[in-house]
Image (cartoon, rainbow, N blue to C red; front, side, top):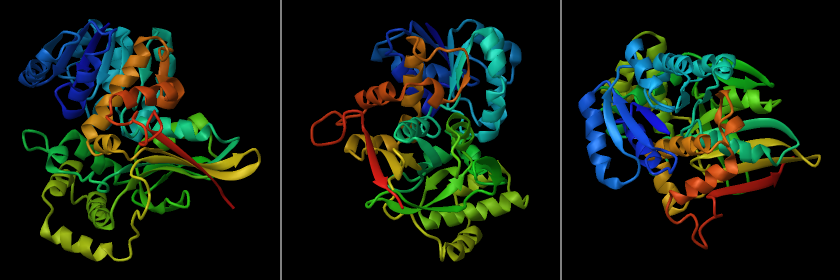
Length: 408
């Protein structure tokens, strides 16, 4: 199979290319980017690693003719070009037109809805598209899938990822690109902490402002407060599992960072900042906004003992109310994965590709991860890429811990 890696030289794309090159079904990977030298640089770095051959190609996704020509020569495209609220639909539409299977790491909820609306066109074209196969969304969706397996009825369903806990601080390398400009990930983040975001309330998909607190008691050992952000999980999990209560994607974040994000949110909503200028400010915080954030920190609740990365579902099992917490084991290997967002996002993308290539995930249509990726196999595959997960006295062999707690 020939793979087109759009945006491959980026941090997350480079990890996906490295892992995908080792898949036995992959015969060639074309690393494509609007910066040809960046694509060539990745090819050179991975040249001696073995696996499938790689070559570089210059492609600007805003050039429809060039994009379709590159897609036409590929069996599958891995799209890591963000932010997805700008480019996601463009690439997926082109992939459907050229009959190219598609996977991405889309973490914006609005384009996720629009991409899911292309399901019929993808099915007619025989194209399998998996949207949001990264860390959050992606790993988080599959943790949610593991949690709901234990329930007869689903009431509330939350997914969460870490911002600045357990060593997962956002540094300048994540916020700025190699040219010193705000990265696509940082611009996306500003989009999803401002305006309105999708959450589920009383079983209905609604729009609320982000950064609202959600206080959770998940087990005797795990409780605390996390904050809403506009990732796609509420959109897709609402469609897949129909929780009758609440659902949201949450950031596990310290009060100080949350307060600064809230200052940026207010200024974006007031038109004082764009997503780009807010992302630049996040990399180099201004004194005035820092003072406003210091005042705003007072009274904010923190994550306390919440796990850094988890899904939690409440409902009933055999008629009894329970809370099911699924979380990544906090071994040294898994902690390293969680704290490196490029690895935590790029490896799942490549593992989703592995399932698509061998036929278990190749059903035509546009799918969120939880409806087309097999969770048990995914977490076993993930464990093989993370040190220490399979060693005795560390964690279950697939790196996922499930706690089921009776609730009142």
